[in-house]
Length: 158
Image 1 (cartoon, rainbow, N blue to C red):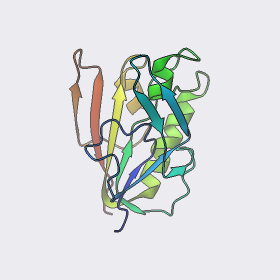
Image 2: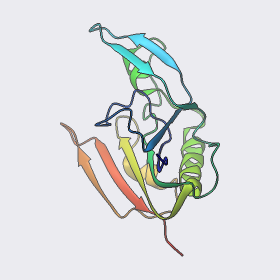
Image 3: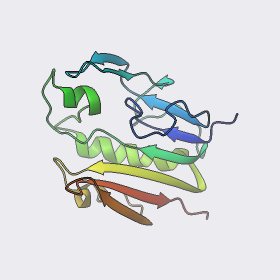
């Protein structure tokens, strides 16, 4: 089956209905396994280990790209949040995310969709959207406090 979806930083694939979806390529900079405090195993096991700032794919290779980067700028070295979600570099996170957006649109085919997920725990969504020149089509805040935002972009066909 042709891989038409790229998950740029899949983590443990938490929001996937099928975390082994054959249409998707799962990427992450991490390969890790942890036992969480409740005894569950958390595995970050991407198909391809790579950095979302420099993806190893051709231009316009995917119909859909999922970008769910770490949203914490600070997390304890051994804390469960770092294990589960990863952490951004406190000094370079803006540049890192800007490069991530740029890479997402580079590998996205014309007319394709970027699904971006962001949690405002440390940084407002409005600040993150300043890191790309692309304009979202629509989005939706969710969660108990509506801190998580799902945002859809479409790469122009022209």
